[in-house]
Image 1 (cartoon, helix red, strand yellow):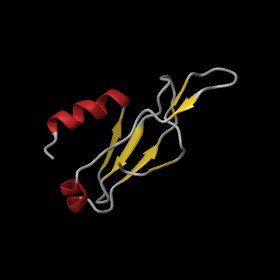
Image 2 (cartoon, one colour):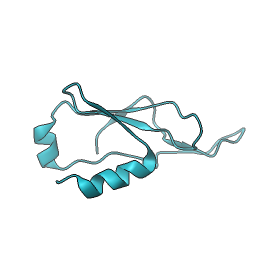
Image 3 (cartoon, one colour):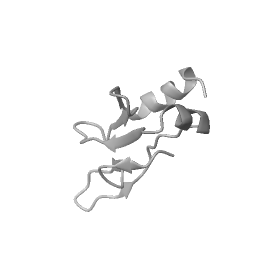
Image 4 (cartoon, one colour):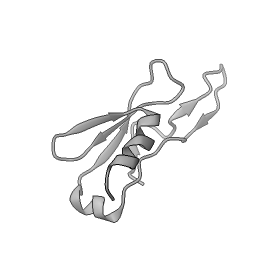
Length: 80
């Protein structure tokens, strides 16, 4: 799992006294870690959803904003 900055939780039930959980995360294989040693994940501010989008930074100038469902789709198309 890539350590996430920007907060501990990625989901809230949006109540006055909210339940907070870390439901979303980014995983990578050791092969990916060798290719992208400076990779990082940052939790972004949520606007509509009850999940926070995650910003994946490959460490080489490229950024990818991941919505929760896109993380699953990305894992299906990316080798490793």
